Length: 142
Image (cartoon, rainbow, N blue to C red):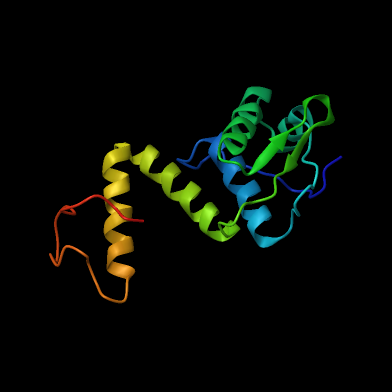
């Protein structure tokens, strides 16, 4: 029951297979290839198709569910979840950024600081602290 054929992983990639699968599902959801409510392949079916262990797919699905990208409905399967008011492309970028920060070993607090600085730099009035570099002086208002 693959709604979209061709889930593949690159065994030579430095990115773990579960992360490759997770990123591909996010990409397909953002691009509209997988619409809200689309049923994903079963864990076993996707593992067979991608040539990976069942636990690899299970981990990808767990992380996607934790990120709110999919929802699992018991024996009915896993489905692309409806997104809240945050645009899907922004959510996907945040998920990708968090994955990259984790792979690089960047602590969560440091990753948040980088995002806060990027958000401040993207505001029309510039950085709220008025400083060109360094850590923000106050709590994010965001």
